[in-house]
Image (cartoon, one colour):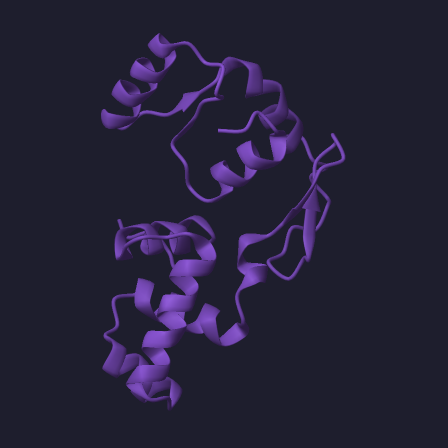
Length: 149
């Protein structure tokens, strides 16, 4: 892992439950794995300041999905993860996360099943997601769909 605030904050935005740097002690790695395996979160202590800075961005600052970049007080610029997707890919992401089949998505968006499959594969690749569970977590985290009670 990189100690850079950019990688750290982006990992958190993408739904990471923990973050370690390469120089972390082996004991920290074991503690992180145990904590996360039991549903907790683990943060390398040296990165707490970066998280606090990112959290303390002025409350009045616009934070819409349409922003091209976000920045922290440290001056690092981050592209919002949804900005790498086309509007159609965002639609497909939302419908997949809601549990629709490829056929249902194709019918609703008036696309072929192959096109839906291509959009779905592009979304997974662009966001670095490996399965539907991660895709749904991403969609909930970015408020594309509401979490179910």
